[in-house]
Amino acid sequence: MSPDRAQLTPVARRTRIPLSALAAASLGLVVLALVLVFYVAPNDANQGFSQRIFYFHVSIAITAYACFGLGAWKAFLHLWKRDPRADLESYVAIHQGVIFGSLVLITGSIWAKISWGHWWLWSEDQLVLFLVLFLFYAAYFMLRFSVDPGPQRENLSAVYALFGVVLIPVSFMAIRLAKQAIHPVVFTRHGPQFGGWILVTYCVAQIAMLVLAYTLYRVELAGKRIDVRLRELREVLA
Amino acid sequence: MSTAEKYVTAAYCAVFAIVLVYVLIIALKLQRLEREVDELAGRAATREEEPEESREAAVVG
Image 1 (cartoon, each protein chain N blue to C red):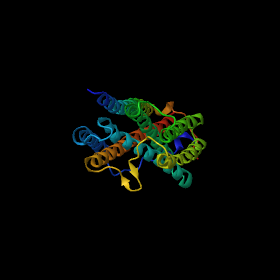
Image 2: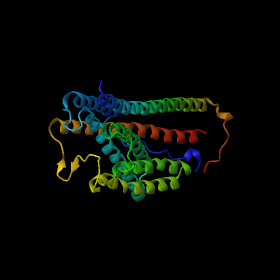
Image 3: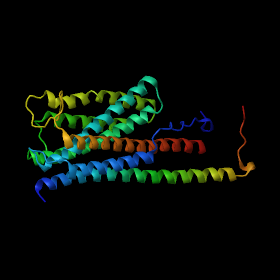
Image 4: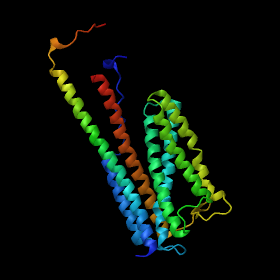
């Protein structure tokens, strides 16, 4: 195809929520969550003040799972419907997942140091499985950028992203299946093991993290789409 | 400040530092994209100003 006849990628679909509104909501929710964490939520009877890491640590972990899940869903859409936008969306969602995953590992290590006296325990299935999940998705980028851009790269990335999604329930269930574990379990089949302001604070923190992740996802996606369109324009103008 | 308070503060600071670095990287990328748009706009404007006779004849159809 001659460059003049080259088809430019269509402009991204108009989404309902404007980015500025999302950014304002993220900021408001994160500030509200912090106020609740430090000024409203009571100290935990067993862990005391250090339990306050829980609100962001668990919310960020659930958000990381959601990002990996979204990445896998978009990968599935790419393979199934050949949606031209799905590959980039899958890549950005996994990128977000890895960023939030690194935050889970950092906050978790700090919490482990206070509670258990160690930064890391290799004997804990929950920790090791989350690390495996994190490294698996970190390797996604090595695979993606080792292949030239094109359909082969998109298909390989999509298949890899789909394989990784199996690790999410394994990681989530590990602590529940383990017979001996020191990692606390806060969500059981009977629901959350806390109530009152602790539950309210956790819910606000969870919503804040999900909205923040979605905002960052939209910003990064917009940047990536502009990048792709600029590359195509450069080819047309060459 | 107790040890627990120090660790909790460190955890929250780490979260915000990483998010801030990420936003900074995105901002730098957007700046680069802006520069590229300017460059392409300049190139398109030069093309429009180019005199008709200097353009190569092309076979149509």
